Length: 86
Image (cartoon, rainbow, N blue to C red):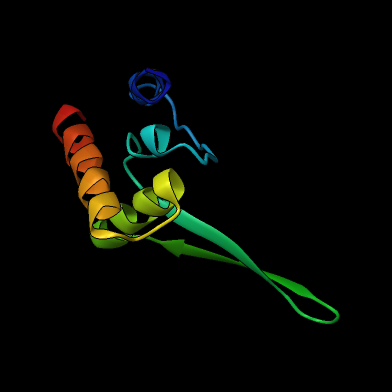
């Protein structure tokens, strides 16, 4: 429900969300993966725009912690269900 409400709000305003909930992330129009690499003296932040396949993989990872066939299938269904309602 939260993801759907945020999607509804996005019709009139830009929404930027950081989430670890696959159900919320699946409602987004664009997905970016933010990661960091810590070195001895510096920490680098990486931001990667995800294509459809990587979006599905990340949904699988955040919902189940694995990239098993079952997790990917469930993530794909979640992704496609939300694509059809956006």
